[in-house]
Every structure is written in structure tokens, then in C-alpha cells.
Length: 134
Image (cartoon, rainbow, N blue to C red; front, side, top):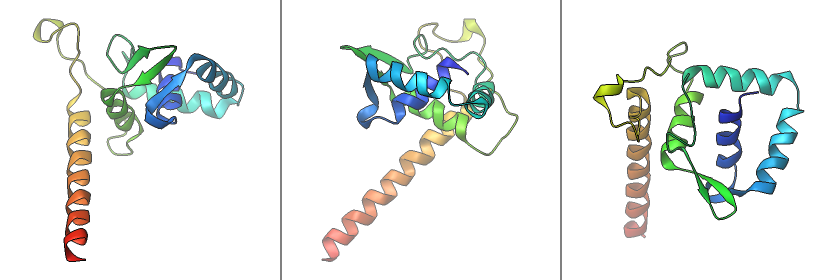
């Protein structure tokens, strides 16, 4: 079982992406003992982003008694779960080309984020149109 991926999957399942440590530990124990299919799935997802580190990359933040997934964490998780581009892995940029504190998102993740934002804008536009038509 890949701990990094499991943490992302657990946190994204909670409202607002925040969970207290007791809940995280309980869910982690359940998933760890759920069988080989969860272990295989997390290994497969982790292979898409080989150098995944949820804390140093800012994907998960520590907050008052628990952990919270960031927007960047949600985007990386969406990238890992995307069906397209199977076999593609995240290729980090050279260390001298980026700020070491916040690694850049891979281009596929940026595209997924832009698609999600466009979908949200279209949905909001449809809702506004319905509201004004009534």
C-alpha cells in the first residue's frame, strides 16, 4: 500500500478535505487490511507521480489536530486517476530551473486543472442563464 496516495484518497473523501488524525488512522487501518486490490491500486496510482511527497509538495497541510488536502493535492490526485495517457509519469523539472519550496505541477495536471475550471465556469453560466430565464 502506498501511504502517500492513501492519504490523498482518504482526505478527498471528507467534506472540505479535512480529517482529524483519529479518522485518518481508522481509515488507513481499514484500507491497509482490505486486501491486495487496494495495495495494487495505490501502487498503480503512485507510479504516475514517482516522487510524490504530500507534505513537502504542499498537497496536504497540517491543521489543528488533522490534515487537509489542498487544491494542488486534488489536482494531482485527479491526474493520477485520469484514464488518458496511461504509462505517462510525472517528469520533474531540473532542480535549478524551479523554486525548491514549491515544485511545479506537471503539464498534464495543469491541463486537467484548466479543464475543471472551464467546466465549473460553464456550469455557473448555465445556472445564471436558468436563473435569469425564470
